[in-house]
Image (cartoon, rainbow, N blue to C red; front, top):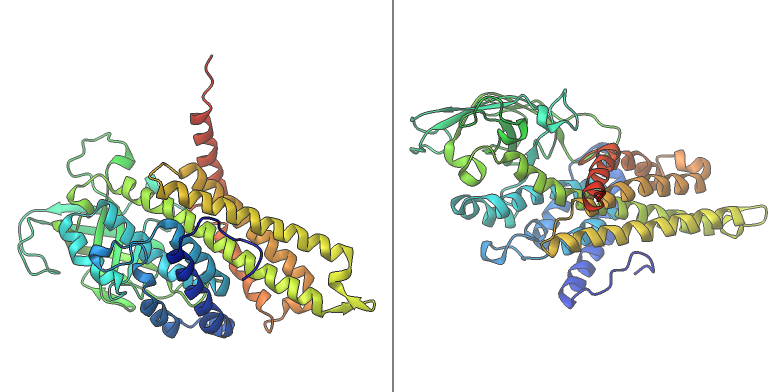
Amino acid sequence: MSRLAQTAGLTDVQQEILSTVRDFVDKEIIPVATQLEHRDEYPTDIVEGLKELGLFGLMIPEEYGGLGESLLTYALCVEEIARGWMSVSGIINTHFIVAYMLKQHGTQEQKDTFLPRMALGEVRGAFSMSEPALGSDVSAISSKGVKVDGGTSRSSGAESGGEYVLDGQKMWLTNGGTSTLVAVLCRSDEGHPEGTAPHKSMTTFLVEKEPGFGEVRPGLTIPGKIDKMGYKGVDTTELIMDGLRIPANRVLGGTTGRGFYQMMDGVEVGRVNVAARGCGVAQRAFELGVSYAQQRETFGKPIAQHQAIQFKLAEMATKVEAAHAMMVNAARKKDSGERNDLEAGMAKYLASEYCKEVVEDAFRIHGGYGFSKEYEIERLYREAPMLLIGEGTAEIQKMIIGRRLLEEYRFQG
């Protein structure tokens, strides 16, 4: 175990879980990650291993077959997994956000139907907010869900008290092909008078589908994987709804107009997850940099003995330590039941920026070899930029942080 990024106050159970995950990462992920990434190949064997470890149910309550662990435990596991290969952490993160939203906001029937199978990894989750033209402006979504009364649901075959017809195009759907349950945010004006604020007329729909690409159920198409610079292996897709019929009992929580708040609650914990990913990638970059610096010689001695390189290593290690501390603080704040959007935004912003800087310094330490696909740092150099935009850009994080600070430090004049 390294000296950096340690977490004080963990229980014996948490330490055992982390030790198991770390061992899995070292033996099953790191040796094959770069090869799979270069082929853009889905890590089927790794995912099966994660199922056996119970990680798909890590935060799902024990009553539904999960491990009932905290956000902190989950974030520390994500940190370890991202240290091995960030794409794998993305596979479980979107699944976890949907499970979290179900646990916090779902009806009892929705929890009973999905959470036990999600804990086993039999149902795999994805969530969808973004659209091709709106970026981070969630309030501007144009996908719509329109209520139609009566009838029998195509998907359930049972009377459902009406259905919703969904139309629209979604973008940047992680796990779009491999998932079987997608939480989709749509505008639903039904029951909301004209002039209602946009964020108060949105609904989250639970869409069940078959895995794969093409038309995966009537009215729902997953066109194919988006070719990306990094973050390969995991499938990132579009989602096209054209007359997609969803039974009314698949409105998350059973009430329309709550979708924006439900999604923001999920994204809040998702930002802790992205911070954890940044911490993990930065740790791995530091490990690669400090190892290479002790093996590579110039001017008759290892480059680690040159002051210029020692300065880089010192800066890298300090950033790894600082990002980890902020991520842990944000997770613990959420676990305590307190509002953590300020801490999550700070952790996500700092960890992603520091990750980019630590990876670049490790890249520089490798010299020309950092540009070679034979070296792992080349992969990390392409992966780190995704963290700057995932779960809200750095600029969005700074807006959130600034607004919350003004709330906390309101001028009393």
